[in-house]
Image (cartoon, rainbow, N blue to C red):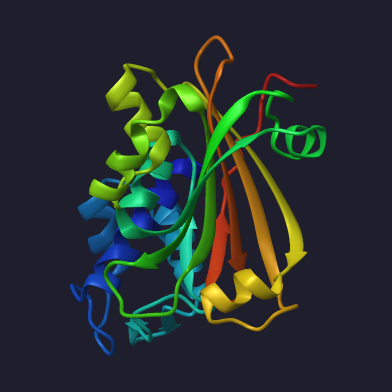
Length: 245
């Protein structure tokens, strides 16, 4: 079974639920109908539905079918990320509300934590991101670090709140994101971030640092995101390398 294929089916069904195409209380199409709709096997359909079950979006009963139970995932926003394109889609699902912008020279501790060059001049854009479909609490606190040479992207970030800053750099400066490194760790919400997110200080959260790089490895941007644990689920798929022993 192709893990990317079932993730795409789950993602489309999830979007259908959150958009109201499949309202709460309705039944999803049958497994056979979904197989025909997406041109996939029953194993793929079942894996996709299992993903929806895990998020509390649906329930499944024999002789009844798969019933929509909620319009948003249990525990808040959920995102399946398997490619740079899907990462860009995340920006379209949420909108940026800029809170602050600062210039700084990276010291040794900042450079080590964020993968920057010590002594180099950077810009940092701090923002919260909100769900542009549902009127809900802020989803996360986000800080994006870019080299000073990309200063013009700040105004573009204000004009295009639904696009990732790294994506705006691509468009403005003719760069191309080739790969993204992602580091995830557990943290506790600091008081300032908790206040901005209307959350409880000291609550559990995820800290995600992403490095956007060109094909030659040059760094385009670094994004650091803090997400309260009850508002976000990150879903990843891993493909087994059959050539490995």
